[in-house]
Amino acid sequence: MSHATPAPSRGLRGKLVLELLVVVLGITISFWLQEWRDQREDRKQETRLLRGLVAELRVDRAELLKRRTRIEQDIASVRRLLQPDTAALSERELDAAMDVALGYVSFAPSRSTYLELQQLGGSRLLRDKLLLHQIIALYDRIYPIATEWDAVNRSFVLERLFPYLDAHGPSFQVEMSGASASGYHEAFRALAPQNEFRNLLRSATVFREGQLASYQLLVAAVDKVLEGMGAGG
Image (cartoon, rainbow, N blue to C red):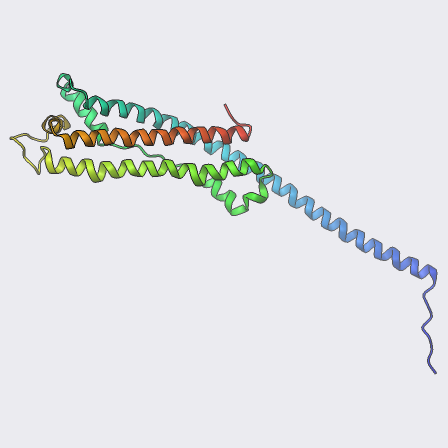
């Protein structure tokens, strides 16, 4: 003979429902608290990273402005070597102008905070997605443009100008009309009549102008990102 299991009483059923509700509520509160803690930690990280970006971008901006001024001065100095009245320049002035022509400017951006932002998941931490897009464009697109122009100028000086002077100008290795390598002014005076040398100087100004334009673009982009973070001016 089988015996049916007696149905729980109303009081027991109510108690079971109440216990279930307490368990569900406890789990829900636990999840909510964990989410609140995670969000609070994310906001701390966001604030810290944005402050780090502001500090580094301000340093970068100051360095870029210095280099931009230096490039403008360098362009004017090299152009001076292409003027027809260079005979009026002193040996010291020619040495200084040639030293500029044989030099180059480069810039290394501060990237530590941006790299940390990438590692921590910037798309999750930064709530302002437009700002996030501007930051990514700055570091991954605009900074590399300036870096590329830096490399163009450096390569031109090291691979074209110096080898040309070594091959055709007066130096300790190459004697020309009894000239000695006492200064760049002698190299300039020996090579100034040659079209190839003058074309190299013109190229040096063109490449520097491209570098200057990339720095101007970069400064504008940095200003835009700083403004987006409320740190402009």
